[in-house]
Length: 159
Ligand SMILES: [Zn+2]
Ligand SMILES: [Zn+2]
Image (cartoon, rainbow, N blue to C red):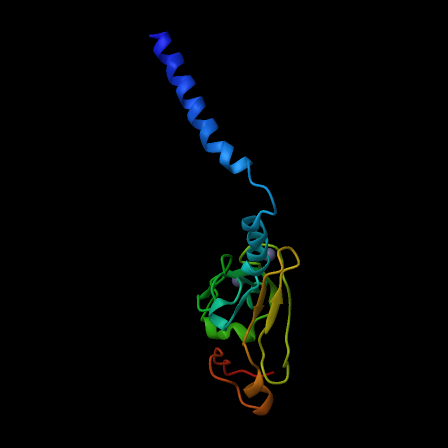
């Protein structure tokens, strides 16, 4: 019984050695490893478009508590009070911060056309370098003064 067990262990050790040896023998640069590093630097370069906007923490207009809107087209429901807002009321609300969808760090964010668009237009994560951009090209935003398509409709009230 124990002899069989020992034999089995010897067999599996031999099999393990056979698998490990060819991997250790490689001489010259490891090309596979080099390409893996290349991929790592480009994997989290980012997204664009309002639909892939990072999760946002907004301020509730009624009770001023923080409301998480995970996806850009989710309803904005305050967990503390009865406030329930549609996603298109986003421009009316104060954006407190954006959360990196990759590593969950707080992101640096800003606007590029504050006179035209009343929403966040870019966000960068200092932790993993993930970058989100509202649009690939802002050419039509810069040429027209109207609100471009793909934006959540601004609500009625202006202040
Ligand atoms: Zn509230
Ligand atoms: Zn990140």
